[in-house]
Length: 117
Image 1 (cartoon, helix red, strand yellow):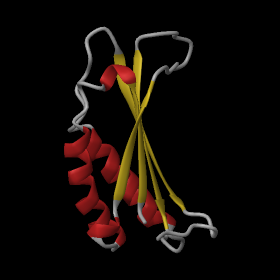
Image 2 (cartoon, rainbow, N blue to C red; image 1 turned 90 degrees about the horizontal axis):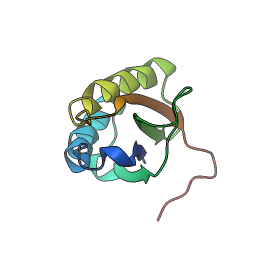
Image 3 (spheres, rainbow, N blue to C red; image 1 turned 90 degrees about the vertical axis):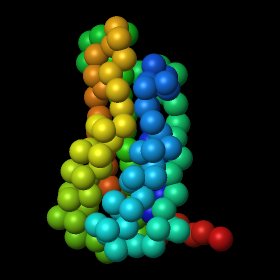
Image 4 (cartoon, rainbow, N blue to C red; image 1 turned 135 degrees about the vertical axis):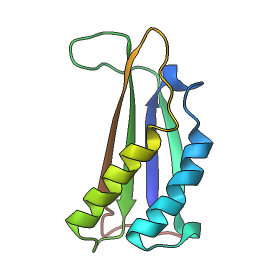
């Protein structure tokens, strides 16, 4: 915990400093939600195909999902979401011939079944 997943359009592979983003994201999460740096884990998933609105091609997107142990106030989750959106914009460059990137983030609670080793 936190479990962080970042989905991003294939076209952004060379325009998204993923490692730099994760290394900046982890301390941000620690500061806002009062967790341990060693607990932060981020995985990136390149998405082969994305469609935005009525356009078949040309759009790129990044979505960051952060799952936390339950108990954080909705206001704290909203604060983290806003901070993440501000941060990721610094690590994604536009790609010629595309629109975007469309950037979104969500902070949610882990399910009661969550376990780790």
